[in-house]
Image 1 (tube, rainbow over the protein chains, first blue to last red):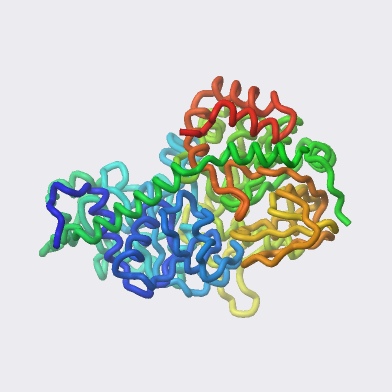
Image 2: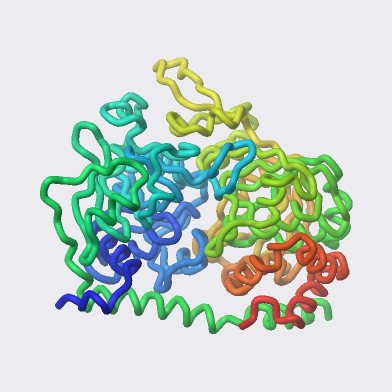
Length: 275
Length: 286
């Protein structure tokens, strides 16, 4: 049964829509934040056997809460294996063992190139962003890439301030000429709808809208002249089950956080060690 | 056999002004106590190396320890950006900060090359990105056997590597388990090393995915229980997520940041006193 349109948020719709892109059994290299939430929702619902890999070296991670950082202890606790950072990038990502790379982004352009480095000039940035992390090589070597991010004219831009990770470069076959192993981004999921690259030109095209959003809204939230598919799909709203699973996941995450009284314990330990 | 010394002695002995220093730990086992000791001893003009600069480098940069940063992802995980780092890059406060930025794969490869005594590493990546335009330690290289074009990055050989681990044994071997990140490569690539540990034990017990750094690879060991806080030590204490959230407002303004650091870090003798000090003010406690 589907939830009523007023009973979920656009953020929940985006996360649920992203989770549905997962096929069960997929080996997925997961970025922190939205991708991680969506991946774990997929694992809690229709894709219990997907293999989640985080760049901290955890393979087959099975966190019961959404990790705060890419190297939280919950990722290692029930993992199939934990390897070093050089190993995760060299032996796993660079060799093509990853089916899907799942990324977020600060800015994206019409060919799904991604910026996570700076806004404004590099040498005197208006905003200094975190930088590359694992993204450039995930974008290069995962067999395919999925991107999840909220859509606005500030994040969907005509020209990136910095190209941190390559989508389809300048479109057409320009990515192929770079010699990368992976095929590139296959889907971008936003809070408004779903975009996929045009098969030839590789330009991102709006192919679906979430309930209650419009083409006009999507155009306004895009910094370039957005291509729109002739026939637009409407995303099914979150089912009761999906919504419950997502909210349970978030509740468990908050509860686990509140329980912690780390400092007091450490003070005791530290005193005991001095004696 | 590696000597067990105080952290103060270890830093005084191994870290000099102008050194390149790698404090590693990938979210897990971040050597916060050692970073504080470097701040207390007022080291200057350091080149700081770290894949994921977080609170410790925000503090070291804000306190004027560094004039260069080599990194691949800089942020306060789960919270946002690093205020002191951004102030240094965007406004040159307290001094300009030169940056050399890579991807994680690039940094990991650089440590591996350093630990292997090779001049550079080769990887598939960076092509088509803007990173080679701004970072001159990324350059194309042609495979002499196949003619394939790849990217090369130079080895990292820090003057000093500093890590935190769960245990050392009486002979000075070091055991790390849980997420082991890049610590082994950082220590083996460096000229000198310091390892802070939660405790010294008679014998290691086996733990899943445990690695052991043999004593011959370890320069100095210092016992600092809780020394990774607010990061975590697997099987010892969890990550203090609330502290990471509390850090953002503390670091927002220059004056408030300085005052906080003077009270809790410069104004305390060691990490034990620091923990008491922040616990008393319930920093990050809800």
